[in-house]
Amino acid sequence: MRVCVCVCVCVCGGASVNRCSGESTMGFSELLHTIGGMGNFQILQTALIMFPTILITCHNFLQNFTAMTPEHHCRPVNWTNGSQVPGGVQDGDLLRVFIPLDKDQKPERCLRFSEPHWQILNLNGTSSLNLDTEGCLDGWVYDQSVDSSIVSEWDLVCDHKSLKSIAQSIYMTGQLVGAIIFGIFSDRYGRKRVLQSATVLMIAVGLGAACAPGFPAYCAFRFLSGMAMTGIIVASLCLTMEWTPTQRRTLVNTYAMYMITLGQVILSGLAYFIRQWRWLQGTVSVTYVIILLYSWGLPESACWLVTHNKLDMAVKNLRAVARLNGRKEQGRKLTPEVVSFHMQEDTAAVKESPFFLDLFRTPGLCKVTCCIALGWFSAGFSFYGLALDLQKFGFNIYGVQMLFTVMDLPTKLLAGLSMGYFGRRITVVSLLLLASCMILVTTFVPQDMNTFQMILCLFGKGSLAGCFSCLYLYTMELFPTEIRQIGMSAGIFSTRLGSLLAPLIYILGSHSPVLQPVMFGLMPILAAIAASFLTETNNQPLLDTIQETEKRMKMAHDKKRNISENTTKNGLVSLLSEMTKVEGKV
Image 1 (tube, rainbow, N blue to C red):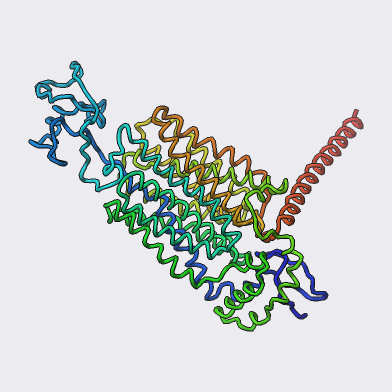
Image 2 (cartoon, helix red, strand yellow; image 1 turned 180 degrees about the vertical axis):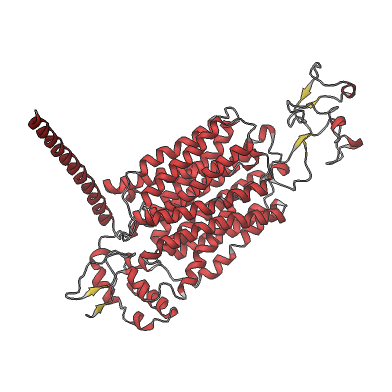
């Protein structure tokens, strides 16, 4: 039988509708495999997902190190000799003359005596004394073993300590805004163009943050960095998945999630050797040049080109991939006429300029959008709630960061295996519920049991990391090609909204410590309930149009209703049968 080489109805990989009378058609996923889906082009595809994911992870957790809070106390009265206290005042006994002690017998961080009290040296304590204190009017003295951070440089402590959390929230707000802007631009102007423009923006504003003269300027550059970061991740993920055969999407997604873990390991190493926050910020930002350089050789997504009626360019890119993989003969069979013949019905149904409101155009799509958005929001809210405050455990922050990173490895592996065996929906729901349990248990753990609290948070954060790996793939499979980028952006928008609110919970938590674990633990439960209403996409084709997505939602709903009716019917039949038997015995 002669094989008609054409592009399928479900552009990004799926069962095609045979329009060649008496001939078998080839779906886009099978076409990618035929032209060498795992050949030389796979190297470029690997680099496409590898570098952005690593660098973006570094940026997300960068403030764990650039905003470390060192041990500090007020600068003693009438002392202006720099960072060293004259006369050995930094010795424990002499420091008591200038700084009162807290309940743990450590120097108060935000109070000092209004004047030196040398008589304290002759007393066993100060509990019986009523001495005048005041705020840190002359600034603070910081632990010199911890190198510079934005906290020590701009005095983000005491009354200004909330500014540290606000800076992280501003960065997350930039990601939230970028998810909307770059998502729309990517669906309208292409994945590759958005990837390149967002990368240039990231390099510029990242270096700007490293050279920021003050805290307001730093926050402004971090806001723009968040925007650029989202543009890079959504464009690179869509570009990768749309060039990946259906059978290998789970593998590629799992690989991308491990790159996130690798990024955290690299960040820990960089932060350990580069202790100056400006140099660390600049080093992470300038490495985005790697993405910019190799992006020029990447082809635009054939999925996007076909759905926007740019058939000549789509065929050109498909032939280039075939040539790169040594499959020139297969690539030569592709022509604009063949693609047009098999795609004309589907491209007519695709809007060339999708908008955010398209996510709510039909009831089924609205249901998908709301449920998946709540999953993203909950994962981001609780994940960053656990991962952005590592100093609270009281251990070495470099070791804690590494420990939290290593915990992601087994959970992501189990998540990848579970997605392939049990499906996407069950995996997401299970991981959300597990994370919720771990976080809520910390509510009942005493504050002095730091090790046990850290272990529970490790399992909670690991479960959420595995959940993220599911959500990235699940979202790509739930939305059709024409709005897939906007759907992905909606998900990232939601998780950035959650991560934006997480630092603000820290501010509230300073007044009510139990509020943090309760809030971070309850949200995954709500998300798990919402995720249970989604359709399963394991081993299903990526759909092309909104109409196809709505049809799949209706079919899933009808299937559930039929199962429910059959169960009810069978139950009634069994009940009548039992009643008949009982009556016969009577």
